[in-house]
Length: 176
Image 1 (tube, rainbow, N blue to C red):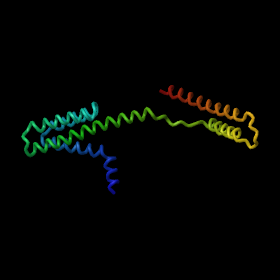
Image 2 (tube, rainbow, N blue to C red):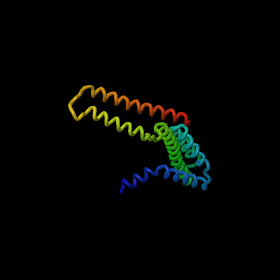
Image 3 (cartoon, rainbow, N blue to C red):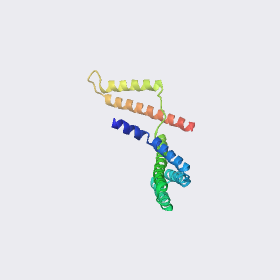
Image 4 (cartoon, rainbow, N blue to C red):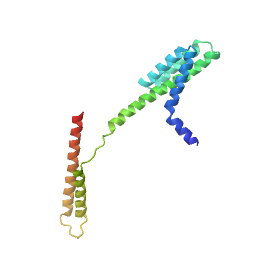
C-alpha cells in the first residue's frame, strides 16, 4: 500500500508541485503580495534557463529580501514562508522541465524510424541461412571446401544487408 502511494506521488510530482505553486501564487495575489508571484516566475525561469542551483540561489535571495523587508509578525512571516516554498518549487519545476526537454531531444536523436524489410530480402536471408546450415552441418561427412562456401554465403548475406541499409539511409536523407 505504501509503495503504491509513493509511486503515485512520484509519478505525479510535477503536477502536484505545479498545483502547489499555483495555490501559493493565488494566495499571494489575494493578500497583495505581488512580489512573491513575480519572484516565483523569475525563479522558475532561472531554474529553466540557468539551472537548479542558480534558480534556488535567487529564490534564497528573494526569501531573505521578503523576510528582512517587513517586521517578523503574523501575516508577514507566513508570506515569507509561503514565498520560500514557492521559490523552491518554482526552481525545481523550471529545472525539471528543462531536463525533460533535454532528455526528449536526446531520445529523439537516438531513435531510428521503424524499418520493414521487403519480402524478397527476408526470403533471401532465410534461403542463405538454410544454405549455411547445410554447408556447416552436412548430412554426409564430406568437409571439402564447405567452410569456405559457408563463409562466402555469409559474406554475401552481410553485403545484402549493408546495401539495404545504405539505400535506406540515402532515402532518409532525401526525405529531409
